[in-house]
Length: 552
Image (cartoon, rainbow, N blue to C red; front, side, top):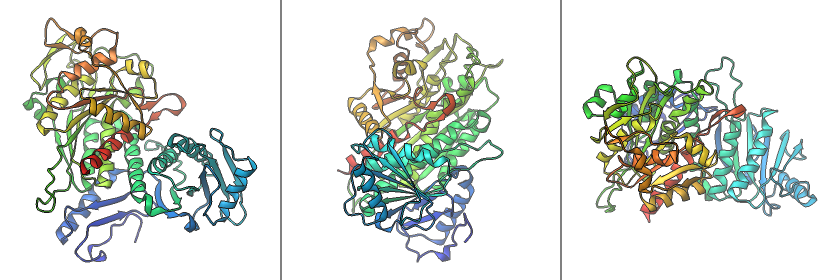
């Protein structure tokens, strides 16, 4: 069978199929399409195949595949180099690498020092050209991430196509995910718009642990998280002319190749009929038509007799989708304006989460809302002082056209009410003030509900994607008063990150709400310029923890 070929229906086991795995050889897409029940008729199979073929081009090939093997079965023929993560000598690992690791630790050459990596060429009795021994210090997920990242960075020089990542000690779920994300982050390349792409190395990562069965579920979740992060990064990294609102809508629609994911796209006419005046005001300055994207991941249907547990209300994720932000009439300075292609990182993170949900198929319902448009100046662009009517019915005086993110989000937050959600979380590169307050380390967190705030904070810490709670005192809303409308879209400079959140809070009514300001964490500047994929790990951790909590 050729690379990327889809097996014929006749090649599959009998008609009772619960999981169909479509893999592409030498590619990284390994898509588990799980059906709603345990039977698959011919017409259902053909429908799945056609959906996968039609959408595969938008799903993207990241060039990094994963396998999970036992340490004692590490003799993978194609492996060229290996990384061994350890904090102490291995005890029950009977392999030449175990002896090398033990000697390195006992000699002190491999010491518990930050980013300490020992480079061993042509190790005895090991058919690899090089092994990188990395000390994980106390073995915390953060230290595992540092060690794996430091070792993976050394792979760039030799460009191996297949690498083993061996854990000398059995990892827990957090350590495993930290290591896989670190290797993926270090080796990631965005080359969509390059005429001579250099490719990604390695292309395959064989993850070896003492007991694979014990971490299979954690491994699957970690791989799905990597795919979600990289899907978000690839879309956030795209130049604005390669990620227009319509292209973003097609990317969202491509996720329908996964079972239980549906997508609906509202155009400008639909938005006008609904009364999305704030969203349309931002979009009207651009020739690119706006798109309001509605993604749904539906939990498996429950049979009442077998499972009387009521269906959990959906969690709604709202992602800011400004595919390019010039500032509109209040135009930004020219310096670094190119980075405003990243202003749809909130939308990209929602796409990344849905990519991971499609792979994992968890028992939870999630809605993704992405108001997507450009913010450009023109003769039709909204002007400072204009007053518009939002979907909620509230009127807004637009004092600053460069405070556009909150305008498109407020209509999305009002739209979210129709889903009677368990919670609504909006994700947005909203304010430069958040960068001043928290830098590039933590995302800003605001929440109307203490339990939701605590759950998101815990998820961020667990996923090494931290956020920091900030206040929502009512006094901060004083600056948003307007003489000409119900509310102004900006206040003064003081506490700008908070006043932006207070604006959004007016429209987040009838449900627990949280706002993640990712202006400082969504991308990096300088030589390492590019999207980070945050907060996909945080959001997935929160969603999967919610699944577990509901199950208990």
